[in-house]
Image (tube, rainbow, N blue to C red; front, side, top):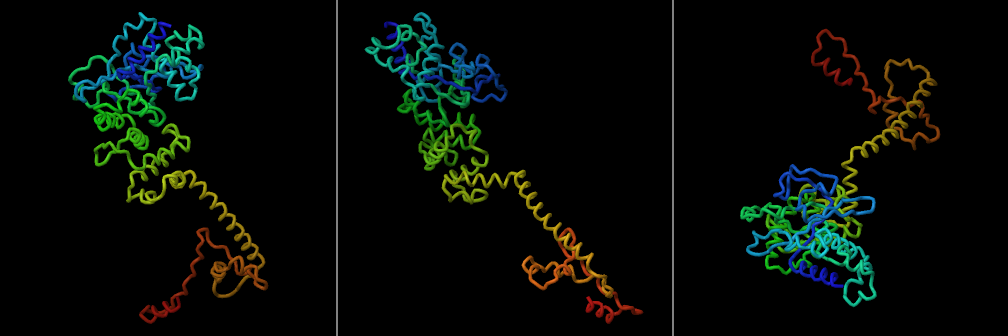
Length: 423
């Protein structure tokens, strides 16, 4: 009973001091830990190989019984004393004394992570009995209520994010105050599925009522988002979740008027991560939210966001050469079959037709065949076989040979005029 009350008191104290836990599956090994983005960082398969945060404040959480150590979590305390440029992350006070009370940083992280999972996953029955002291008399076993990893024992705010924002807690100096890209200033700015838990984490840390809220929203978080998130649609949604809007290069504490419409559309379609949105859908949606009137966005500007999926499918069909090639091949097969039938009819006509001994070697059959339609060919009394002659592959009738130029001693103007009249 005493141990349980101690854990609950410790949890309340840590929540009041702006502690938070950053969890991600983006496991990295950095060369330079002092920058939010390290171009030399490499992905690693194991949680223990991740070095982006302080090792003594780390815990590895298996996401399923068959997959181990896929999620890495770090425990931080946000320090907001002094001017806003000096705010940064530090170690929790007294973390090295936790072992004297049969607890550890890893225990706090695991309990908070499970609490977060059960709370937002709709499975809160497992720790309901720990919410008040009187319920302990009929609640779970003594081992359960004194285990520091029990769900509900600790409830430090957890920011689950697809990106690794972690940084070190030691070595902070005045140089970090002027370093806009320092990893020691990493706030939880993008939490949950497409940022849907960001506001909840801020409320739990009481950042939503902080006196430096404006600096966090318009300066610190936008820099983190622009550096880490490369997809323009995801970046737009992340800023929508924070309640900010960028205009003429300046971030304002005002949500864009299309934020709620776009987010509702994404949630209605069950989209939980940006990888579920295709390149064409992203392009069309960004044209709509930016309200661009010229260029390729002009056709998407005045249509509702719900039409973006149909328009993106049409755009994909136009841009996909494989699909266009299949359509062309199908049309060619139909045209080729028609040509073969006409050529067969013409061959039969040539066999049955007597040889014409007229002076002109090229009859007018090619031009007559060009004017014949299927309807006219079926009219009774019309011998259409005698009029059909195969045209060249290109579809144009053979050119008629001009009559010979009259034999004159000197082809003068009269001879030339006679030739032109003959043609």
